Image 1 (cartoon, rainbow, N blue to C red):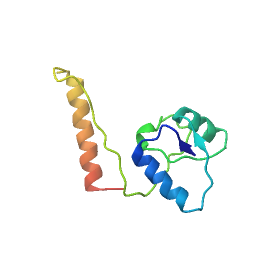
Image 2 (cartoon, rainbow, N blue to C red):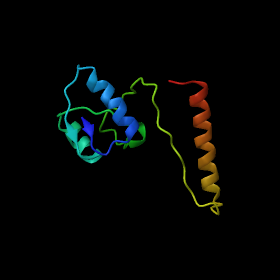
Image 3 (cartoon, rainbow, N blue to C red):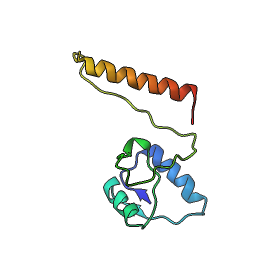
Image 4 (cartoon, rainbow, N blue to C red):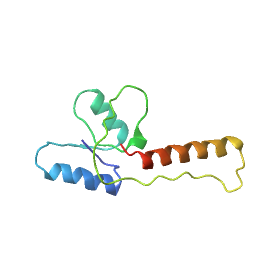
Length: 103
């Protein structure tokens, strides 16, 4: 399935798969509809991991691909919450571990 709201990088990866000629595809207007189609057995989709709803309802299988998405954390510059600082440290630790030991 190809989602209508896919970012440009994802559309590029999708097109690489489609151009292989080894799959049939159809369009889905948005991610929620895509998940509905997956749940009903109508198809599978290639989606960035940040869309994982962690519900346990879907199998998220890593796809080996050199392309990757940037990710940013946005907050107000005056935000001094300790919980935010702790969250950023957890993200940094996870990132450093992923860089040191990529999947």
